[in-house]
Image (cartoon, rainbow, N blue to C red):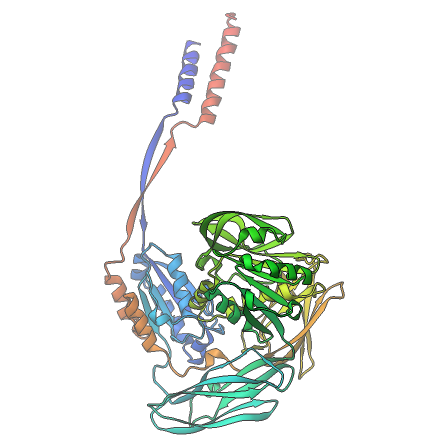
Amino acid sequence: MCALKTLSLFLVLALFISPKIQTTTFQTIKPKLSILVDNSKSISYFKEEKNLQDFIYELKNNTRVSDKFEIENYIFSSDLQVSDSIDFLGSATNIYKAVTAVNKLNSEKKAPILLLTDGNQTIGNAYEFMSSEQKVYPIIFGDTTTYTDLKITQINTNKYSYLNNKFPVEVLLNYDGIGAVKKTFSIESGGKTIFSKRMQFSKKEGSRIITFDLVASKVGVNYFTGSIEKIKNEKNIKNNTRNFSVEVIDEQARVLLLTDVLHPDIGSLKKAIESNPQRAVTVSKVADFNGNFSEFELVILYQPTNVFKAVFAKIKKAQCNLFIVTGTNTDWALLNAQQLGFNKNFLQETENYGARYHSSFSTFLQKDIGFEQFPPLKDAFGILNFYREHQDIVLQEIRGVETTQPLISFLEQEKQKIAVVFGEGIWRWRAASFLRSGTFQDFDQFIGNAVQYVTAHKNKARLEVNSEHIYASNTVINIAAFFTDTNYKFDNSAALEITLTNKETKKKTTFPFSLRNNSYQIALENLSPGVYNFKVQVLGQSHSKYGSFKITKYQMEAQFTHAAAFKLKQLAVNTGGASFYSDEITRLTQDLLTDETYYSEQKAIVKEQILLEWKWLLLLIISACTAEWFLRKYYGKI
C-alpha cells in the first residue's frame, strides 16, 4: 500500500513537471527549377511538338538535374497554369505575364526559369526588355530562318462613328525580305472593295503606314477586311488579312463640364468621355456659361467653389444628373449646404487618398482596372457622411490603411443621379492605366461606364449584356450579363441562357450562364468562323437582349514565319541567364549543374516532445489511488 501511495504521489508530481526533450532534424532544401512551357498553337504551326516534348522528357529524366533541383512544371499561353499537361491549343501568347507570375511565386528564392518557346508573343508587354529576379534560360524552338514575308501588323480605328461621317483608319504593314516589291493593299466591306492603294516595299523600307478615311454609311456594326497581296512563294499568307469593325451610331449625348480652376483633370475627363463618339463634352468657366442646363444629359461640376452658388440653384430646379469632382479648391461648406445626399466634416488640411476596388459594387458592370496601383487623389481631410442610398465602387486607403470611406460613389434619388469623385488628380490615373496596359482603354471605359450610368434614364433595362463585335478564330469568347431586380439591385438568383444563331447555316445552339463575381458569365469555345446573332434570355421572365458578333478566320498564332530568337537572346542577357537552341540540352544541363549559385541548403527543424503522455499518466494515477483504497478497505484500515 505504501508503494502504491508513493507511486501515486510520484505520478502527480510528474504530471505537474511534464518533462520534455528536444529533437533536431535536418531537412535539405533544393533550389527550384521552373520549367515554363509555351502551350500555344504557334508551336504546332512550326511542327515542334515532338521536339519540345522530347526535350522535357530528357530534362526531367536527367538524375543529376533532379538531384540538384526541385523541378516545378508550368505551361502558359495567355495565362500561366501549374501543370505539365501540354496540348498546344493556346490561342494567344503572353511571355511577359508568364515570367512575371513565376517570379512572384518564387520571390526571395533562387529558382532559375527555363523558358521553352518560339518567342513569338501576341499579347502583353515587350518581354525582351523586362527585368527578372530569377535568371531566365530561353530554349528556342522553331525555324530560325528568316523568310520573305509581307503582313498586316496592325489596324487602328475608332470603335464608334456617326452615321455619314468619315472615320480615320491607320494600317501598319511590314515586309521581311531583300528585293523590292510592289503590292496592293485593299479594304473590303459587304463583298465590295471600298479602298485600295499600291504600296512599294524594300529592305530599307520594310515598314509602311497607310492612313485614310472611310465613310460610316450604315447604322449598326460594320465589318471590314483589310488585305495585302501575297508575294510569290510566300510561306505564310495567313497574316496577309486582318478584320476590324466599327459601330455606327446616329445620336450623341451632350455633357457640360463647369469649372472655376484650371487643372489637368479636366482634359483627361474630356478625352475619356469623348473616347466614345456617342458623347460630346463642352468645357466652360462658370462665369462664362449662359446656356440652358436642360440641353445636357449630364453636368460635371469640377471642384465647386463659392461662384457655383447660382449654378446649384439652377441645377436643383432642372434636376440635372451630376458628376462632381472635389479637391483642394472645393468649397466644402457650400457643397454641404446643397443637400446632395452627403456631407463632409472637413478640416483645413489636405490628405492623399489611395484607392481600393470595392468588389461588392453591383450598380453596373465594372472590373478592377488596377485601382490599388494608381496614384492617390488629394482632397480636404475629413469624414464623409451619407443620408441617401449610395453605392461605392472605390474605397479610400490612407497611408496604406484600408477604410470603409468611399473615394468614388454613386447616389440616386427620384429622377436625379449623382456620381462623386472625392479627390483631384484623376489625370494621373489615366496615365498610370496607360503605363500598366499600354492603352487608355481601361480607364476611358471606366469613366464611360460611370457616365453611362449617371445619364441613363430611370426606366433603364434590367438586363445588360457585354460582348465584343469581332473575335479571332479559336479564341475564347467571353460574354458577361448583368441582371437587376425591380430596385435595380443585382439579382443573383436568376437563371440566364444565351441562344446563338449562325447567320449562314441558321443553326441554333443554347448555353447556360454561370454566376461569377456579381455577374453572369459564359466562355464560348470552338465556334466556327462566321457571323452569329445571339439572344440572352432570363428564364421564366420576359427580359431579353439581342446582339451579334463575328468570328474571323484570322489566328494570331499563325502570323509568324520564324522563331523570335533575337528577342529571346535579349531576354537572357537582361536577366543574367543564357539562351539555347532545342538541340543544346547537353550544354544547358552542364551550365545548370556547374553553376555554383544554385546550391542546396540544410534547414534545422527543432521539435519539442513531451516524455509522458498526460492521458495515460492520469489513468495510472487514478488506477494507483483506486488500488490503494481497495487494499486499505480490504485489510480493515478504513
